[in-house]
Amino acid sequence: MRRLISAAVLVLTAAAAPVAGAQELQFYDTMSGANFVQWWQAKAVPACQKEVGATVKYASSGSAEVLQRIKAAGDGKGDIDLLFLAPDKIAGFAREGVLDDLRGSAALIPNLAKAEPPDSTEAAGTPLNGTGAPFFRYTYVLIYNGDQVKSPPKSWKELHQRRDEWKGRISYVDPRSTVSGAGRFFVASFLKAHGSDLGLAGGAGNASWDAAWQKLAEFEKANARKHAESGGAHAAQLATGEIWIGFHALDFVEYSKKVGTMPPSIKTVMLAEGVPGGAGYLAIAKNIPPARKQAAARFINCALSDAIQVQMSQEMFQFPGIGVWDKLPADVYRFMPDRQTALSARLADPPAEAIKHITDVWSQRVGY
Image (cartoon, rainbow, N blue to C red):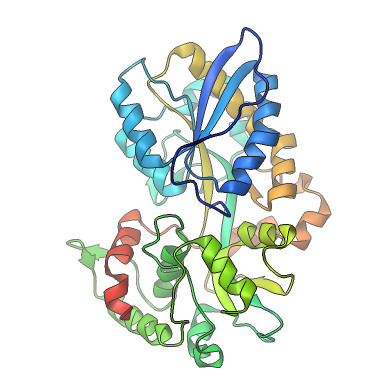
C-alpha cells in the first residue's frame, strides 16, 4: 500500500463526533499512509460510525506493536476492535490466531458475500479462513516519464533487454525498506519473469533462482546509483527527473498526480508477464467482548457498501474490494484498468517466505 507516507509510529487521529450513549470501538490501521489516513478520518469513519451507531476512535500504528498488544490482552479483555492490515500482515495475524472468523458474523456482514477471489480467500499465499474482508485492491505498475521515455517497455524481459537505453535513470525502492514493499514486489516479479519459481529449499533459494538473480544483477548496473528507501522518496526521484522509470502502486501514482506531487507526464504500464497486486483487509480482533464484536462487524458491512466502495475508488484510485465494478463511474477508467484487465494481469502472490528471502539476500546478489 496503499500510502504516500507510511505510518510507522502510533499517530492518533481525531475521531468523528461521538455517538451519544453508543458502543465505543477502537480501530487500528497499520496499512494506510497519510493520504488514506485522512480519507478514513474524513469520509469512511464518520459515515460508518453514524450508520453503525458506535463511536469509532481511529488510530494509525505499526503492525508489530498492535499484534503484541492484542496478544498481551488475553481472552475477552482486548482493547483493539477493528484492524486494517496489508496482505502479509493479515497473513501473520491469522497464523497467530488473534483474528475473529468473520463468517460467524455473516448475518451482520451481508456485503462480505460480494468479495471476490483470490483476495476473499487468501493473502500473501496464506489461507484466510474467514479472518479478513478485502476493503480495497491495488496493483503495482511500471511508471515512466513520457517526456523522456517515448516508447516504454511492455514486458519484464523487454525492460531488462533495453535497460541501457535508460542507464542511470531507472530505479526501484530498496527491497529492505521498512515502509514500502514496492521494491520487494519488483524484485519478486522480475525474478519470476526470468525463470524463478520463488521456491525455497532449506531456507535458501532453489536452483531456479540463480539465472534470474544474474539477470537482475545485470539490470542493476543500469540503475540509478541510489535506491530510494521509501515510496515518497521514490516518487520524488521521478518528480525531479532524477529517474525516468520506476515501479510503484497505481493508486500511489494517480493520487500523487492528482495532488501535484508527481508531474502529469508520469504514465503507467502493466507489464505483459504480469504485475503483483493485493488487498487491504478489514479484520476484527478475536479477544473482544461480543457486543463490540457485533458493532465491529456492522462497521465492516458499512465499509463494504456500494456507496463507500464507489466513493473510495473515485477519490483514492483503488480497485473496489467487492464486486461493484459495474457501479463505478466511467471517468474512473481514465485512470484505472477495468476489472478484466486488472485481474488478468495480476500475478499470484509471492510466498511470504520468498519475500523475506529477497529482503535478506538482495544486496549481496545484485552487488548493491
